[in-house]
Each structure stands twice: as structure tokens, then as C-alpha cells.
Length: 163
Image (cartoon, rainbow, N blue to C red; front, side, top):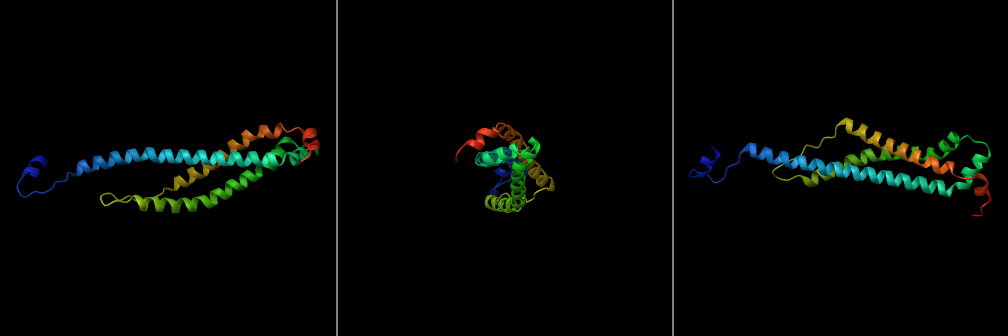
């Protein structure tokens, strides 16, 4: 039918809705890969930043941690003392990151609007839960990875060293 109409006299253009839907559907399925890549890169960045901050924190506080061990703090008390800062930083990141993420999402969606296709700006509530759980999971993983570094701090050697 579309071919017959396109060849008819007086018809300058023809658009088949099903073809447009298929094209937009293919485009959106490809866009999902881009979104997953951005999420993976953001997660990797969050993990690396948190890992580096924790590593620097422990390295700069070796004498303090050794002093806690000498004073008889249990390993869990020592770890919680050091990792409390990670938990606070992660909580601050969540509190500041969610509203800033909303603004960034709106900005990006405004930039990619074109005449043919308009995207609905919508963030599902479950997305906020996923974001919070992801940050908390990274925090727990980094804390577990760095627990070994705290355990390897030698009390006597650390306290004897001259800064």
C-alpha cells in the first residue's frame, strides 16, 4: 500500500509509522548499551576514588593505627575507627550525588532532544535505590579489601619510625 501511495501523482512524501517505530526501537536498544557503559564507568570511578582515599588515609595514619593496636583495641574496633570515615564520605556522596544526578540527567536529556523524537524525562524510584545500594556495596567491598592492610600494620615498627 505504501509503495502504491508513494508512486501516486501529487504525493511528495510518505511515512510509515511501523517503520518509524522500528527505527526508534533499534536506536533505543543501542542507547541501552551506552547507558550501561556510562553506569559501569561511573561505578569504576566511584570504586577507584573510594579505594584511593582509603589507601591514602591508612598510609597517613599508620602511627595512629599502631597506637590503637598497642592500646589493646580489638581488630574490629580498629577497623571501625578507620572505616567510619569511608561510611561518612559515602553517605555525603549519596546525599549530594542524588540531586546533582537529577540535574545532570535533565541537562543531558535536554541536549539530546531532536525534532523527530522527544524523550520522556523520567527516573523511576527504584533507580534511586539501585544507586544507593551500589554506593554502599562499593563502600563495603573497599572496606573489606583494606582490612588486610590495617591488619598488616606492625605495632612496634610503626611506632619506632621517624616521620
